Length: 281
Ligand SMILES: C[S@@+](CC[C@H](N)C(=O)[O-])C[C@H]1O[C@@H](n2cnc3c(N)ncnc32)[C@H](O)[C@@H]1O
Image 1 (tube, rainbow, N blue to C red):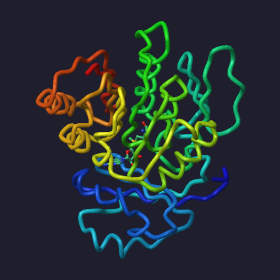
Image 2: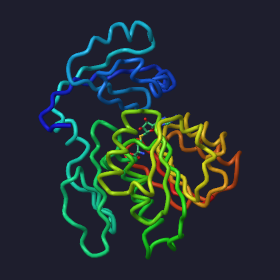
Image 3: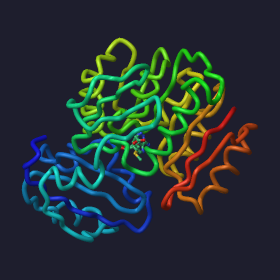
Image 4: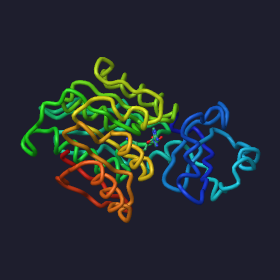
C-alpha cells in the first residue's frame, strides 16, 4: 500500500464482541471487493476502504452495530500509529516493510509489511507474544527446545508464525479467518523467503485446533480462546503463548483451561488492557 494512499476508516461498535464475530469469514461477500482491511478488536472493528463507502445497507442488516467514528487518514498516518520504527527484541529485530538493514552477527531480522492487517509488532499483545517467543526459542533464556512444528491461530500479518520460524521452529502453520490478513501474511512469507517452512491458510482457528505442533500461539479474544480450549487446541503441546484476553478476563481463561488440562504459567505480562502468557503444557 502506498504511503500517501487515502483511507476512509469506519469505526464500528457492537454491544458484545460476539456481535462482530460474523465479520470474520466472508468479508468480501458482506462488504464487497472494495473492503481493503478489517481489524476486529473486542467490541469494535475498523473497516478500511480507499474511498468513502455507503455502509447504510450493511448496517441496516445488522442493527446491533453502529458507526462510532469515521477517520480519514493517509496510510502512513494510520500505520505510524502502530509502527513507529523497528522493534528490537534482543536476538530478534522486526522491521516494518522490506527496507531494513542486514542482520548483525547472530541477530535475526524479520521483515513485516503489515498492509492493513493486524500485527506489525507495535500492538501490546503482539509485542508481548514476541517477547515470550524470543524467551522460549532464543538460547540463554529458557533451554531452547528443538521444535519441529508450531501453530499460529489468528495469525494476522503472520508476525508470530514467521518469528517462530526465524527463531528455529522447522514448520509453521498459521490460520486466520480474514482473507485480507492471509493475503498479507503470504506476502510476508515471501518477503522473508520462508515459503518452504511457513504456510498460512484462511479458515476458522477452531477448525485447525488439532493440527500437531509442540508450540501453540493464539492471540485471539477470550470467546475464541474458550472455543479453542474446548476443541483441543491446547492439548498435546509442550508450550503455548496466549494473548488477546483482557486482564479482567484472565481468570476466566485460566479456569477454562484448568478444566481441560493441567498447565504451568511460566510467565505473564499485563500491558495496557491485555494479558499475555507463556504456558508449559
Ligand atoms: C489480535 S490479532 C493477532 C494477529 C497476530 N497473531 C499478532 O499477534 O499480531 C487476532 C487475529 O485473529 C483473527 N481471528 C479472530 N478470531 C478468529 C477465528 N475464530 N478464527 C481465525 N482467525 C481469527 C483476526 O482476523 C486477527 O487477524
